[in-house]
Image (cartoon, rainbow, N blue to C red; front, side, top):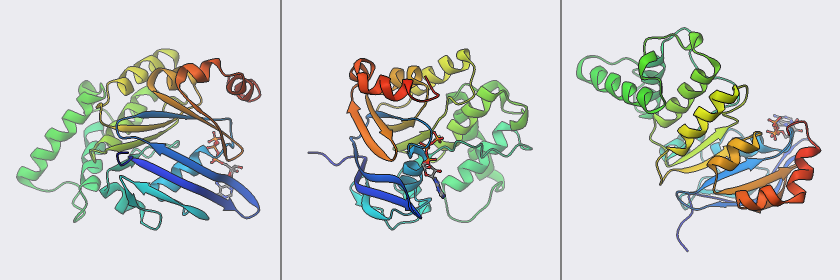
Length: 250
Ligand SMILES: Nc1ncnc2c1ncn2[C@@H]1O[C@H](COP(=O)(O)OP(=O)(O)OP(=O)(O)O)[C@@H](O)[C@H]1O
């Protein structure tokens, strides 16, 4: 078997007496797109925080591209090809699209923190920022303040900022939250156009977005994985329907 992009073995995370993530096994092969679904409080964001190094697991192990990163910092994991977005916006509201992307590029390439270096380096980074903006459909909004973007535009910019580090494993935490129906269609198209060899873990409440983008689906409830299957199997599954009908996110 080839080395997976991501492997979780018996990962558990407790917060005091609460078990937010319970004994989760997860394996994502390189280039696959997995949707992680589940009602509020299922433990999805905690799982993303565990994978990206925001919180350590209480027990279990996490491998990224075959390397045990369980005790590594989030920063080291970025160096291994992992990037993520957050449910809450991490944009710099008072900077424009291009400046946000240049900051993301500065952070992505580590080393000395020089957000706006001089001369040739600035030109190269500006060019790369434009490419990223183009890739997510914001080519014409490079000069617009992040705060002035539509909700969908902000999500596009967050995606571009996550792509700044040229990740091989990308985790998106509810990218469709708060988007209008037409913005959702656009986001689905953008996600569909991501590189084929990019491995994607997509946390999503919107079944339509998740099932359109993903080639496999995991459903969590109360910290536990309840279902693994294809989008077709998820659509046909009585269990998945019951979980969604039982939650506020149908
Ligand atoms: N830092 C924390 N301290 C204490 N409890 C936490 C912490 N983070 C998460 N929890 C709890 O862990 C459980 C899982 O939360 P989590 O945010 O991971 O769920 P979720 O599936 O992402 O939900 P949502 O869809 O609402 O984002 C919840 O009961 C939550 O209150």
